[in-house]
Image (tube, rainbow, N blue to C red; front, side, top):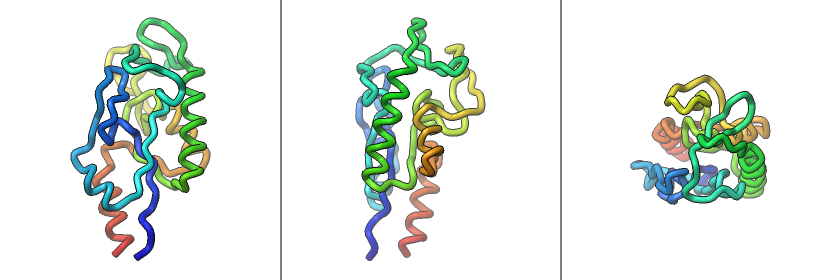
Length: 154
């Protein structure tokens, strides 16, 4: 049997308490993901040096700003670069990232007003991964990825 494909995955989706609140977003289909893929967990925000917990942040005008008005763009960019290097070194060609996040959002992110409104766009890490040729999926597509991997492996 061929080796399982490597999948970069937001660490919070695996149950790591690394969200801004100190919580996680563990997927209920994690066991199936682990059966289908060799998972490579990463958290760009902590990799960039941000603490847990931390103030929430959103993308506004091309910068990442905390709700307290602090510009945390450099930490987000640093973490994205670190995670990209890690994912590429591990051989990841796909990533499953936490939706709506200013780091990992794929297709939509919060609009920068801290009102809960979404706008089209990608988080810093998702955009960098895409630019590097890694196919990025939001966490809402986890089951679809499992089905595709299962079909491909026979």
